Image 1 (cartoon, one colour):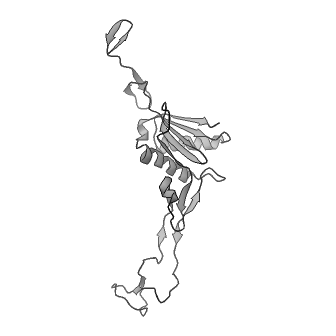
Image 2: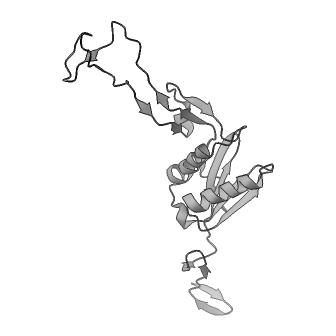
Image 3: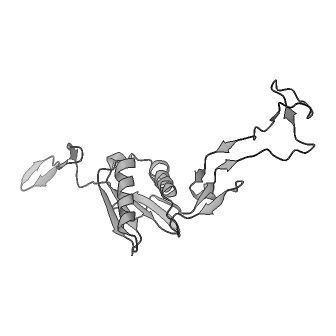
Length: 194
């Protein structure tokens, strides 16, 4: 109960949003999501809060796509025929025990504190904001911040993103495209980082 202008009663504030034409009670609680992807740290949280809910390294691990050709055969290689029986290397129809023949893996992005710190074979540590803009990596960082750390549905919140002061119009357009097309946010704002 609150008193407003001498009238006591329940006070509700309603705002009509034009993106989905719904009525939103308590519009003073906007709950906009804030993403600050810096060159060293990524910070994510809610607008109006004192500290971010999530802080993690911007750098990420990347395991590139691999095409494995026929591996070098030595005495320790276990070969099997089509029936799965060990052949001792005497069959022309062989498959390697570890199934690496003509194997193709898609590139994997490793995001987060402990995940990046753990050693993995062939993993490279990269940063999406140095030299080349890696949009796939930036999307993976946004995914990690929104879905794993904040555990929110971005379609229910406006999104506030910071950018470097020297970013071009094309980069801002790409950020906007990702925000509206992939994450389908209600509203989007890009602010320059000091």
